[in-house]
Image (tube, rainbow, N blue to C red; front, side):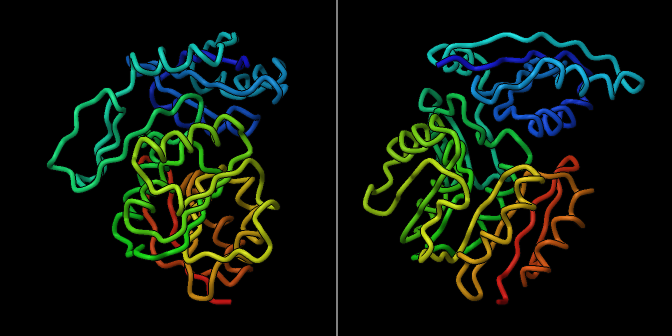
Length: 282
């Protein structure tokens, strides 16, 4: 399988903006350049992203910054080699160390998560994943039933399992993300009897399933469409944790949550990216 690759050269302050914009047109995985002067974006070829869409996107920013880009493709088997050259461990507030299996363990962190992300989103580098991990770390999840909606690498589901969740389920539209999540569960020695991962969208959640906590680190437009469906699967007084959008988008997200009887409990912001924890009151 080949993936569309897009190399973007831009000023550092526009990297997060372009990540969000590119996610809107179908790119799903991002990697900042080591020198801070741009990013790499990837998408499955079946997303059928048109070159004209990319051109129109960057034209909107011509008066604000200089930006150049180059389209290409990358084979599935080449991703890990490129990733390993650039990947650095992530420290989440001295609570969690996210590392690859070729990095040494560090006993000063109470929690460690090992990931091999391949083409999947969610390594802890991005502000949204970082904040979700940080919020989750302070929650009591012992015995909880947890769903990771749009799981990417499975990093959030894995943390739930490490924190003692009794059942962890996860889904993603991307076949490779499902494969990657299963591999990462194994890397973290999660008991196979407590987790389940499948390929699909929000409509594929079993009708009778309900959860103490649902995690959704997805872009704004998908969240706005999915929140009403996710709420139906949250237990009474259960929780929904959301990220994947800017602080400026909070009002739109919260309006939809209020329509679904979801009450804001806490929130965080990191480099303009937002994360929300809500309680189900329905």
